[in-house]
Image (cartoon, rainbow, N blue to C red):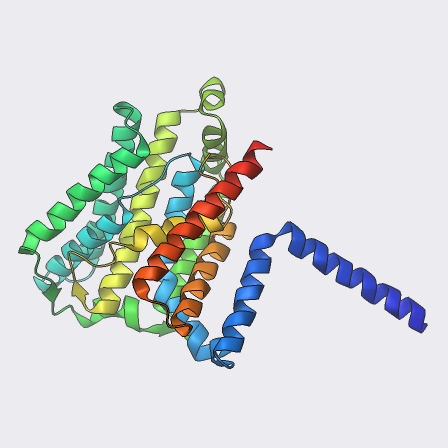
Length: 324
């Protein structure tokens, strides 16, 4: 092959890469943040230990974000996830330290998550209360129940079996990371390969079209919020295991992070547009943004404000894109 042909082929490859990065700004942002974090940390960022630690740290947020994706695709939002984590954490820890073993606390936790989601969905579909208000009300109920159980005192002394979820590894990967991957793959399958997934996109895109198509819109919304509650419960189990305690105030602020992951991942608040795969990228971007801000020694409270600004900017961009 001549030098001219090689140069021409290389030029075409470079153009394809530029086109891919232009069409996928999230991938571009991901790469930019990875490079910036690597440079600022003098290579520490790309070390296997640091990457694994980052994945373990944000696994619970990633799990929450999968459920949040379904709800936002339905043109809603779930503000109760953080409080649901606190409630499930308390229930799982209480049952575990009082001799109920492992299975019953886990099933109870998942059941409470599902019931909390169904409660939000019922208020939204039956009482016609906006999702923001309905899930905020459920969040306060969950928070109140969590603090009432032990008068705001955390619960210690969990059994070794329960600690497996937050501390052990499977083939070198943290159990919580494996659980995140499993939940994410299930979410991708749910949206891409099932009737329910197609109905989510239709209802979220245009609820009237859903009704006219014969879709049981209320059922779809109820299942969507129940799934979000279950994801919050799974995240709660991971957090409780990692912290070796049940706490009435644990991870209450993770709601903002899960919403940010979904929005940055390209899911529109207008509904009907987005994907779990995009949310995974969004979660990784959030993880790297926080990692980068920590490297730059930015005040944690300022970090929260920056994440809030990112949500506003990304939401505005998504809405403009949807209106075109």
